[in-house]
Length: 253
Image (cartoon, rainbow, N blue to C red; front, side):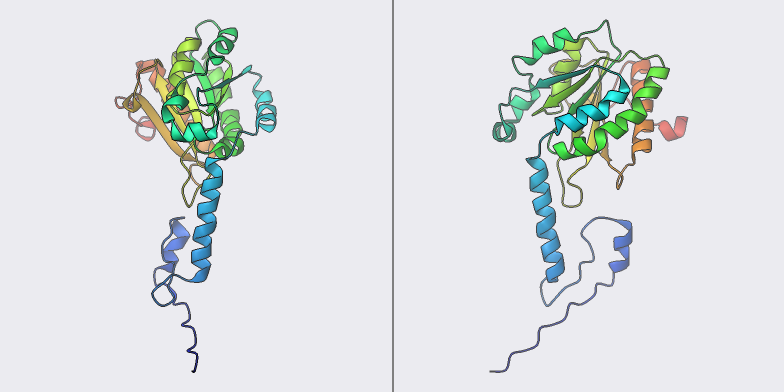
């Protein structure tokens, strides 16, 4: 029996569009399937995304990178005892652990304007890579503007809503959480920023503003820091956040 030659991979006519996006488009085909190269690339991207979900904060290098900011650092945990429980019980990631309340009380300062929170979320690797560079660009202009900053809070096994309890415990007017976003097949290390005026338990997502995809290949550090500074200033000036606070930075200057 004569073996038929394998059909060569056909180039996709839209291949030029791949220069403008990291999305999985214009993959080409071999017969009725995608080329082996693209199939393997998909499996590798999926593996990176799974690894990101189970990644942990690399605390020693992270704390070292925060030292130039000359702000105290407080470490807290949610009620999720481990990563498995964190993933299976999202509600536990939204509440402070028993020991974390007293820990925050020891770092309480007089009426801070802003508390900055670094949280592992669904990709601790995003925080390990991007949080310190963003804060290095964000903290100095906030301080020059006269805002009082609470100690930086590093939160493990944390969901976004944990910022409400942290902000309320420290009496902060505004909470800004940098957190690892849900990893995708093109970005396993995307950092998100969630801003909440008047943080307190019971708030829902319409009370927050979000800046997402912070990373060199997405929203670069300087642009992210500028946008966050503008949102923080406007939130504190207008005393609101979420749906009523629109991103009018480019319109208003």
